[in-house]
Each structure stands twice: as structure tokens, then as C-alpha cells.
Amino acid sequence: MGVILEFAEIVDVQELLTIAREYAQHWWLIVVLILLQALLFSFALAGSLFLWIAAPLYPPAMAAFILAIGGTLGGLGAYFLSRYLTQEWRQKFESSHGYKLLRSQDNFYTLFALRVLPAFPHAAINFSAGLLKAKLSHFIIAALLGIAIKSYLYASVIYAASDDLT
Image 1 (cartoon, rainbow, N blue to C red):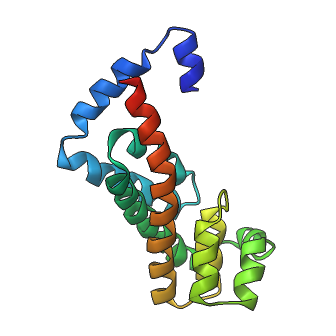
Image 2: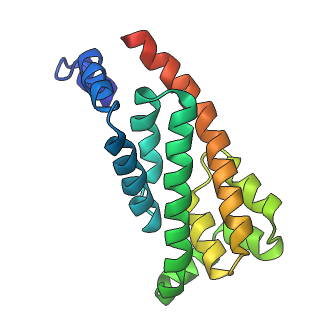
């Protein structure tokens, strides 16, 4: 969408990035990004979109920190909300690959591997782990590490590309 807006000369990406980076100097923006991401992930919405906000604004390590905390908190929200899913939603998650894999191999390594896989839906991991009552310590550590590693890699590329724009 950003590329289309730039080509149509509706938005100047360089100017927008400069303005956004001024706001990134405020501590409260980090808190807002974490909380919004956590809220979206809790309800199986696209919290991963915050990669495209945090990565251009912050150095890769900070962006990975923001994304790992927000993703893990959102994962915990979904983990606990899974107990209140309707039967229809329960069946949807129980038919997912993530659920089937976690049901057969409920351990830290499986949770971690699912987190670092590119494009694997976080909602499937979060809600499936909650439905299966996966060990909470494994769930939290795997989420923090897996999301941090994957986010750092993606954020490094995005930050470098956005630095070239300014």
C-alpha cells in the first residue's frame, strides 16, 4: 500500500519516515506499540503488521525487543482466551497443522521451531497451545526467543532499507 501511495505521489515516504522517527524518540510510543500488538495477537488479528512500524523507526535490536514483548503478551492473551472459544472456533484451531503438531509433540523445541518458521500463523500457535494447555514456561520462553530472533532478522533488512530512504 505504501508503494502505491508513493508512486501516486499521495504520500512522501521520506517525509513520513522523518516525522515518524521524531515520535520514536518518545518512550510512550514503545509502550503503545507493544500494547496494540498484544491486543491484536490476543484476538487472532494481524499483530505482525507492527513489524512494518517498529522496524523502520528503531534499530533492529530495539525493534526485535518491542515485537518480542508485544507478540509474547498477545500470545499469552490468546493462550488464556482459548478457554472461552466457541465450539466452531475450537474446531477451526483443532484442524490446524499447528494444533496437530503440538498435540503430538508438546515441548519447548516444537513451540520454538513454530515461532521461527517464516509465515507460520501466530494465532494457530497461541490458541492451539492454550487449548492443549501447553506448559506455560515453555510457551513464554519459546515465544520470546522465537519472535525475537525472527523479528531481528526481518527488522535488520527493513531498517537498512528505510535508512537508505532518509
